[in-house]
Length: 306
Ligand code: DON
Image (cartoon, rainbow, N blue to C red):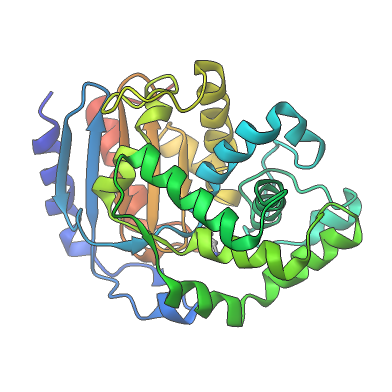
């Protein structure tokens, strides 16, 4: 199978559609991104990376960070995490507050904003916010095997100024005692993790441990056990695209985690880690062309898990 040709074909075939969808504008810094961009990187478990289009352009990973923060939190507290956050799809938007009132401040899953804020609270335990941000960044350097990754302070501050919905979610959960630290501390870390800047090549490297039973094949570093990698992939498949998760499973058939910056990390277990990026989003807040690109990739490779 010629993965380079597949990546090139996808970028070429989607060129006429560039700009479909709408760039996120509720975070002012993200509204400035040029919409007509598309990148793809495919890193196989045998250690080869194929790339096409804007695969080396840096973008804001936003909610894709939730998959890595979940990994970190599981490493700290193990399965006890499920006392404070569920693992069911929400069927509601990524920033929805509705279920929290009926469900005792326990978010449905770790990938909607409310759930990710609880995960951040867990990673924060015993640390100052600055230390927790440093721990997250070092973890990303380790999993991507790339010390050049950085957090874009401008994006973090932009969201800190306008993140009213997240303040509402966090205050509401603190009211149910499901946040242990001050809201400002937790959200300070959360906004910084979301502001991690990466390109498709770096992101596809960072996801390799999920495709390779918990071990990064480029470095040989073990990140999680095979069982934990399987479980993180299961949550990505069922919850990684919010109320678009069912549709993503139907069309692509791979575990995936999207971000409002337009990136998607997809995992083909035993085969490859794939990162796509195109900043214009569909109505569920997921990359429109990124989803189409992965649909084309899955059709050409036969990598669907189903
Ligand atoms: O909390 C937020 O709203 C953003 N920092 C992240 C949301 C996000 O990426 C949703 N993804 N599609």
